Length: 437
Image (cartoon, rainbow, N blue to C red; front, top):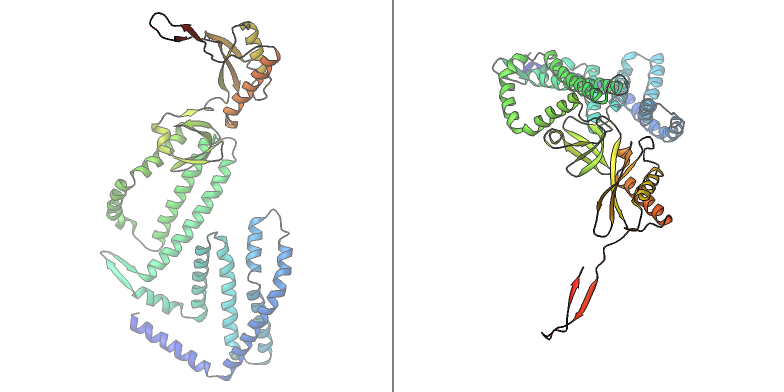
C-alpha cells in the first residue's frame, strides 16, 4: 500500500467520524462523558486521601506499595472508568448499541491509559516511564480506533534504502520499542541474578562480583542481538560497519577498556575484594564495591574515592587484609636513662594489652632499639584484627595507656634540652663566648 492509498483511507475514516458527529446522539454522549469526568474529579478529591491512608499501612512489600500508590494517584481515572461503565450498561439496556459507540470508545481509551500509566511505573526513571506510558497508550488507541493497520502502512512507507538494508520508520520504531523492552528485562534479570549470587556463601566475594557482572553484560548483549534479529535486521550486514566503529572506539576508549580489563583481572586473581582494607597512594580505607570501571574505597573520614581499576594493576597497593585480617602495628617511644629498661618493657606490654582492640592471643612485644641523646628508645609491637576500624586511633589509645602507666610507676618520658655556658673573655677583649651541648 502506497502513501496515496493510506492518505485516502485516513480521509475516509475522518469523514465517517464527521458524519457520526452530526448525529444528535453524539452530542448526548459527549455531554454525558464531560459530566462524568467532572464528577470523577470531584469524587477523587475525597476518596484518594482516605485510600492513601490505608495503603500506607502496607509494610515489607515496597513493590506492591509502589503499584498501589500508582493506582491511587489515578483515582479520578478509575472513578471515571467506573462511571462510564455504569452509564454504558444503563444506556444499552434502554437504547440501541449504536447510540453508545462513543461511550464505548472513551471507556476503552480510559482503561488503556490507566493500564499503561500503571504499568509504566515499574520503570524508576520518570522520563522513561512517562514516555513508555504514552507509547503504550498510543498503540492501544490506534487499535481501539481501528486505524492501526493504516498507521503501520504509512510508517512503513517512510523508508530509505542502505544497500541491502531497508530502513523504515515502522522498523525503527519496532526496533526501539523491542530493544528497550528486552534490555530492560535483561537488566531486571541480571540484577536478580546478581542479588542471588551476592548472598551465596559458597562463592568468594570476588567470584560473586565477577559472576554478577558477567551475567549483566551477557544478558544485555543477548537482549540487543535478539531485539535486532526479531525485527528482521540482518546482523551479518552490520559486520563491516561495526568493525569500523570498533576501530574508532578502540582509540577513543583506551582507558575505559583498560579499566574494564583490569577489573576482570582483579576479580580473577582475587587480589582485592569488597571489605578489604587497602592503602593506595596515600588513600587508606576499605573497599565498598567493585565496579566495571572503578573501585569504590571509603575512608575513615567518610569520603568515597572512585579509583580506576588500572591503578590497582599498575600501582603498589597495600592490602591489609589480603590473606589475614591480623595486622601488626609499631609504636616508638623513649624513656629517661634513670628507668629500668626491663621494667619499662613489662609495663609497656601491660599497657598495650589493656587496650580493647589489641589482640591478647598474640602477646605484644617491646624491644630496646637504641641509646638516644636523651632517652632509651623502645619499639612496642602489637596486633589488631580490624584494620578497617582505623590505625591512628588504636595507636593513640596505646600511647595514652603508656602515658598513664609510666606516670603511675614514676617513669619519666624525657624531652630534648640544651645547656648554655657563658665564660669570661680573654685578652682579646671579648665579653664572652658560649658553647651549647
